[in-house]
Amino acid sequence: MNDPNSLASPIPPVIPPAPGQLGDDPSERAPIPNAIVAIEAILRRPRRVMFQLRQPDAGRLIAAMIFVSVACALIYGVVVGTFSGGTQLWAAPVKIAGGLMISALICLPSLYIFTCLSGSQARLVEVVGLLAGLLMLMTILLIGFAPVAWIFSQSTESLAWMGALHLIFWFIATVFGLRFLKAGYSHSNARSHAGFHTWVIIFLLVALQMTTALRPILGTADTFLPTQKQFFGTHWAECLKASDSEAKPGPRN
Amino acid sequence: MPVPTDKLKPCEISVLLRGELPSIAAWMERWDARRFAFHVGIIIVGAGLYGAAMGWWRDPQQALYVAIKFPLIILLTTLGNALLNGMLAPLLGLNIPFRQSFSAILMSFAITSVILGAFSPLLAFMIWNSPPMSPQAVSGGTYDFIKLTNVAVIAFAGTTGNVRLFQLLARLGGNPAVARRVLFAWLAGNLFLGSQLSWILRPFIGSPALPVEFFRATALHGNFYENVLRSLLQIFQQFD
Image 1 (cartoon, each protein chain N blue to C red):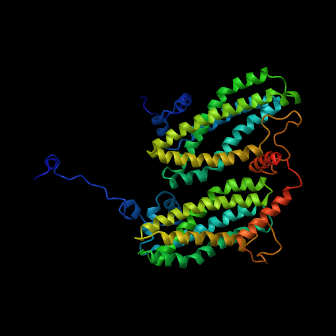
Image 2: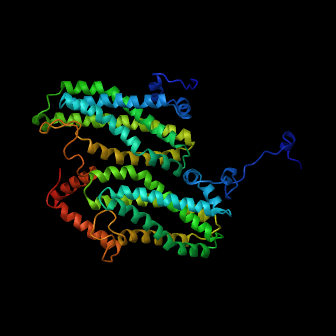
Image 3: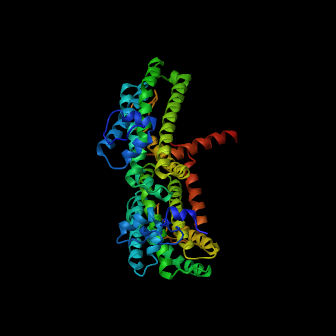
């Protein structure tokens, strides 16, 4: 039996490809020549970044994304440093950019292991690229938060309050970064997300501990790095207690 | 339906207030410096007039200060969050360029300012009929009435501006769920920064016991949220 519609239109309509596979949309195959295009792509068309990470010359894109991450982390670090001023103007950017890169480096092997265990076909380069994408998206979002953080750092004296504010900004930025990483992970034929979710917890714990291991980032101290080892939970509890005892003498107006 | 036109006319204010989406969407297609200046002008005049009426109860000088500060808060909030809002829109599913997100927010603030400007004669009339600001007036019902009127007018103007912004975002994104998500994120950011800027730029209504000044000496001491938290703690301590 012939389809009656085929008589009316002998040429079949062009059906756009399903958006499932990376690169099905021609715009996703457009190369990413520099860091500016990479920023634009990760915000507006993250699938383009994911597709390019699978290409043989993905190294340049990864280098560009790491460069942007470091630059943005340094800029945000300067804003963090304006709270205390002095040496913190250079110490905070160095610690934030360094801490972020060290956290990523520490967590990279476990991410690759979890990726392989879940049955994903992603190569190590692609996993590195996805992690670099997470860092870039995180840090450019932090730049978006920077004007707000700066206004608060100029008008707030409470260390605990500013610490909480930076943590909230960091958390929001990380959620968006992890969303990109998860989308990339989903496209690598992973059978399960359990490993990925475990890794997310590991990454968050490492990054939070880094804020304590590299302290002070916001406040001031006699030494560049701490002389006493502490877990981040204990350190934050101490900070909150100290700020509570400072606030007790009387309300400020 | 009126044909969308790119020419700038003063009657654009009514187009904004009616929320004529074809025309507004057509304006946003390309950058127009004159239209941008027009919207900034609306904010300066509309919010400035309302600010003047608000500060007039304390002193004419306070009226002048608030007329400058009120538009300043709106413009600084728009500028301070521009980058963040421009990034959040595509990340939350609304793929519009930075310029469009900035214009959309500025337009919603322009609508809010037009409404505030329109209510400024009413507020001024109310202030004119009120007893002069004194410790008695502040401790009595007049102060509360003026304060509540301001809250009601600003809430109405803000809500209307955001309803129009939601309609515009839904048209640009073609999806109300995405528009709601983006609007919520933008609102959260703008409220967060706007509250702190209002705290820094206080006073607005003023106090008879304190001098008339542009900034309080403690403008950069503490923040809005710390103060709210401290007030809440004081309330709870009364129950202990």
